Structures are given as C-alpha cells and as structure tokens.
Length: 432
Image (cartoon, rainbow, N blue to C red; front, top):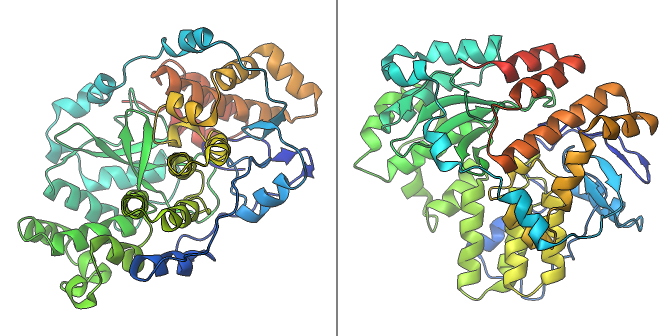
C-alpha cells in the first residue's frame, strides 16, 4: 500500500501482495520497442492488446501483468480505491450536474494559495536550506539530491521561490518550491506511504490536481540543462545558477553531437520519460495518420512508467476514442479513475465522460466515508487502520472535485494519525 490512496489491496480473487513499483531508472520491457518508433519505421502489423477493466487498483503499484491476470479472472467489477464493488446503476444527468455544479472555481484559488507570509516576503527571504529542512523535518523524508540546485535554476528562470510551508489552499501532499509569473506552482510531491527509496517527483499544481513534471529532481534539472543548451537567450543564466551540479548531469553540446532528430527524441533517449513529451509524440504520430504508432505509444505510456498517476490512462483513453475504439477507451478511463483523482491531469467530468459514467463514483465514495459506510467495511473484516486510510484518500478525491482542500485537510491529517502515521499527519496538517 502506498501513495495518496491507501486502499486495501484485496481483490475478489483473494489477497494480492503489493509489489514495489518499477525502478525509475530501469527500462520497461516495451522501452526498446517504443524508442525504436522515435527514429525508425512504424510496426505496420502490430495490434495493441485490448484495454481491460482490471480488478487491481492502481492505488497500489501492481504491474501490468498483475492487472491483466486479474482481468482474466472473469470478474468485471466497478473497482474503486482497492475495494471491489458491483457497478451501481447509472443515475440521471440532472443528478450528475447537481453534484458537479457545487464545484468551486479553482483558477483563482491557485493565485491565493500561497500563505500571506510567503506572498509578503521577498524571494531572497526563503533559502534553499529552508526547503531541505522542511522536507526532512516536516515531510519526514530525505531531501532530494540537487534540491538546492533546482531552486537556483527555478529562480534563474524568473520564478519566485516560495516558502515550503505555504500550503494553504493547496493539495496537502505537496512541498511548494517556486511560483511562475503565470501563477503556477512548481512543487515536490510527498506520497504519504511511498515505498522505501522512491524519490520525490517534481510536479506542477494545476487547476485539476497535479501534473507530473519529472520523476525526480535530478531528471528535471537534466532536462532544463538540455533545453538551456539549445536556447542561447536563457542558457547562460541557468548554467550559472546550477553551478557544479550541472557538470555532473549534462555536458554542453551533447545534444548537437548526438545528431538525434529533435529535442523530444533526445530527452526520451538520454534523459528520461516525461508525460508531456510522450503525449506530444503520440499526437505527432496521430497527426501524420500513423494510428498504429500512436496506439503503441499510448499503451506504452500506461505500462507502469509513472506509478500512482492516472493521467496516462486518461490520455490513452482519448487516443483510443479518436481512432474509434470506444469500448477500449471506456476501459482505459475507468482504470484511470481507480487512481487518485488529482493525478488525472483533467477534470473529473472529462474522465467520467470518457468512462461512460456519470456521478456514481462520487456518490459511492460519499457513502463510503459516512459512519454507516465505515461500519460496513469493519463488518466485512477490513482493519480499522485501513478504513481510516481509505477515508483519507476518499476525502482527497472529493476535495479535488469540490475544489476546496482547506475544509478537509484537518480530517485527512486525523485519519493518518488514527492509522498510526503521525509523521504524515503532521505534514498533511502543516500550513503557515
């Protein structure tokens, strides 16, 4: 069990043991096939496997093989957050709208997200050591390597360094780093129960939850340096800011010497996997009329490249729908909705529409966090600790839909405290 959603990992086929997520530096079995598409011809006769609605929740880092085996068990159930429940009958669109119309506008909330102390203080008042200390003492995990260098680079790019405790109004699992002139917040994601050794991803706080920028700080700096190398106007400032750390990550001129087709190809082959780059490559294939390559790339995106994130499955659903594979698109979107909703990279409405659902998932989790719903889980044998962890994850999903984190953050923290995770509770509740 791990990440933002701490649901139990039992499926109808019996208790399944969680696996560690794939190492970020380790290529997947499809990695070579996919990278071959970047420079070589399409695989003309390859047909992607049909997407399936699996019975293993992506809240836990199970492998693609686990999900496929689960699907072959013959159970087609509406699975949400590690609980297997039969799909509820759909309700009217009017009822669906009544739930979603209560959602608050989020654009303005991001501007007001920073606490007053951070907004009133000059960027220089917040030092890199503040963030490292916060990660270690409040977020209760090891500060990422090169964190100080990243902060220097972000500031060199024109972003304002903000206090790591400026979490008011934000999803409570982030550590804010900087704010762009457009008001976007670059942050670190602190998964509540990440596997040992898993690095903190770099994310951007957006209207619809979080967008993954890079799997770790080192990878993100590496990308920035490559981009600076081919951008003569901004490169010098970035290189001056990164200092000696830059020499350990990238050698100036390597992109040109590689003779690779373009920046995206270089990033994927030499730096790492990035969601925006994979999506751009997929759309490029689609724009050329190469549906086979687009389908291969879209499916590769979902193959445990970004554990815990639902965005790859939403995007794959969009691609499948565009090429006329409506049934498979629904299946992929339904898998996405088993991930934390704030990792979808879009609104709940968009993902639910792709899945062919209305508000049944919202109503389902609203019922699960009632006292009656929790008693039912206890009667079914779920451990009390798991019940409150489920409640915490459900509350985060609902806060994402409603657009208000501050109203539920104290209860979320209390859930982790009741589950014996005092350090996480302290981090969740912390607001300047």
